[in-house]
Length: 304
Image (cartoon, rainbow, N blue to C red):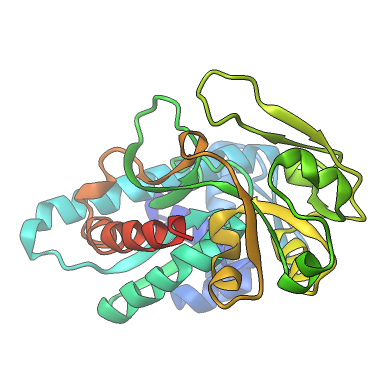
């Protein structure tokens, strides 16, 4: 059996969630899929998958081997497309990742437009609030909100976002006015575990000056942006989020911004891809399509 074909079966099984689904995806019989996995396990001398009647789970060795398989298959695809040169049109599976909220609100609509414009491209979008290794997990493109360390990844800055404090107009109408972070102690706060449940830190407008720490006693603590924003919209208190996370609600008047971090403390937003992947037509086409649209959308949000 060809080892590369077996690797494709192995990776497809992981992506689809079961051996049966991999067989349907690839047009292989269940027996052929089982033989391919068995061939790889015999070749490497260890079990790669823990199997049950309904699911599969990677062994410790399988996790390492899966990352290697994804790198090998990506490099083979890149070699084929480089050989095809300018004649290669965008096609195949484009794998992307981004944070849960920004990926859903900002990246996903642009990806939908891109797929409409390129019918031979399919996409898999992983929305995760954790750092993903693009190379080890076979990711073509990532959107990240962070100051990036030096790496071999190709990064294109597309904008920036700031943290803001927002509340519903009906909540603000019946509460003391807010002019500085210290005023928050007199208000009901809706906190998120990711931003600190007991205190909020506000950077100083002057770079290098110490930040202001405000101790809050939240009436509600949640672990998702969506829950915090929904509670704020319903008038239950103030919440602190990134600007893009309440852009729609502010635009239509359901929320009002009462505080915003200074521009110098803004977090940059980048589109990333592993070195060499920009030569792959589907990746290059997505960068060319997405970068100006992301810049326009993030610039619009920053004006709120």
